[in-house]
Image (tube, rainbow, N blue to C red):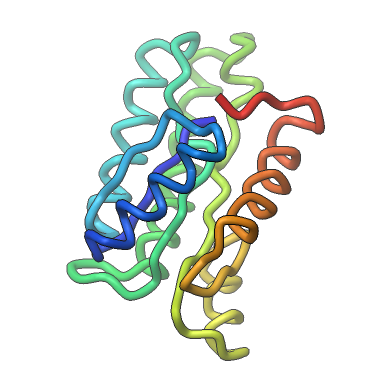
Length: 160
């Protein structure tokens, strides 16, 4: 499972990354803002287009909502547009490639301290798949990851 953390708070970055590692996840990248998240997703798709069999797409993006440069909502909208374009490009370039046929959009999970109905609705409206409030406990993170990994890969998925 390839994970991208988009979080502007250094302490939150370290805590979240460490919790994921203790849960068995090892392929974790961290960025500081929404623009960097979009750039990281774009780079992973560009690499994938050059060599689909190498994989490299992010499976799950843990997206803080309030970040400088570009917030998580705007970043998610940009990522969804980018994924649509890149998936169409991949299918045009390699229509019979098994990796391309299995390629899919990332699961984007909102991480926010704001827990109102409006916040949750805004996250859903921009294309996020899940909504989790901070601070996130290890048990909540574990349950969320197990759920979304099983959505992506089925119940027999290996997290490492």
